[in-house]
Image (tube, rainbow over all chains, first blue to last red; front, side, top):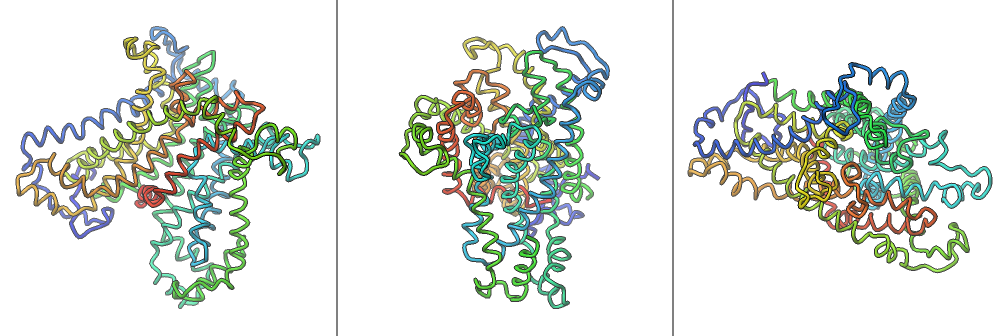
Length: 324
Length: 305
């Protein structure tokens, strides 16, 4: 039951997740708190909770509310109820909506099928005692330090039609065949995905390197003694043993693909082949004709999709503790 | 790729003792693959740096894909002085430093309360904080923008008469958003600290605040170092919130301002590249100095699942 107060972790337990849940060593503690302690505790919990509620959860609820209204964002008295009009509008009469949904899905698939396995491969290779492993790690990890907005700029220099490095390398610079990689709506989503992979793979590599170090070497030895091949050992023993990291990476990959905003917004504000849900939300809020209701409806679509990985992650993370 | 992986994985398995010394001969395939990947990884940054080091005159004369002409730091100087990078950089400091300090302070209070004290709603609160951090920021954008716009404040406080275009609103939303992650990480860290520590203090009559301030806080220094480093990078690198709230160009932090630069220096890619490199420098310096903290922070956040 979640109402059971959380157990104090026994001193000998270093891993809070595995703490035995039936023991209640701290049951009497609340009663021992003096009244001044109670005030201190109330402030300790109250202030951060108020900030969190006011600036994260209240706006989330307001987004849902606003999605059923028609409003230009000017006078609060002008808010009119609109029923489900905004949802009908985005699904039927708003051309960028379905492409955006497809692009978000493509983003997810690309990160999940290309960038994440690439990061895992790099981690597996670098986890061996190879010479220069630290240098390789630093190189692959460097893009993780950069903002996605900056990554957009840096790749713009690489992708430009007339002066970009890529067209020089392909020998097309200055010719009519030169491709404007970020400008051409048939290729720019792929170009942006490669730029995103540049960052995502390094992040995944780092997390898996930590995960691989945590796998008990005797597991691998046992598998080798049983005659398992290296590939079998990895996929049947090592990979499943990294379950906690795998969950984190699945969640990060999904959430990154829903949050994809900075790269496309830097390139062209998320238009012309680079439509993404997050960018559409902002286009409807800050443009000239502010349509808060439509922007909010798009935000709610984004919210509902995001709740899937969030709930999955939370139930994995907190499920064990609250079942106590 | 998979062949390389399989073969090298096989090598690793062949010598069962993992620390039996590296045998470079057996890793040729891996090295070739890694060198190719590393070169590909370095090209975009290297190209930006290379472009930034060349005056626009020499690239106009010889083309961007050439080695001829002068190399100097003129573009950096120009971006810093005329491009306004000195201002943008200072704006980033004004936003990042208070945001990180307040985030860590509030998160440590919350984490202490949910991890060290037995209370009914601990898990509920922790779930609420963690979930809040995972939401896409755009979900909250419309109401937050309207709240800031319609909240009237004295003109002495903000020249717009509302909270738009102020640093305080950007800092506040950074705090609210990052607090969830920091609370999650810190509470895990504090839970792992022995209960005897505060138990003993309790017997000595130490109140909650003294337990927090004098016992738990000093023990959390490694976690603060890791989280602090990570949060500085996160907030410095944030593009979205200033884009939403700050309208006057000269108040933008560096990460958001570089976007405007793209329009400003449309034909001067050298200057744009120099701006990009300047923006990278602080993060790279932090990375090189505090690599251990940064990596620890990232893995701390994912060590539990």
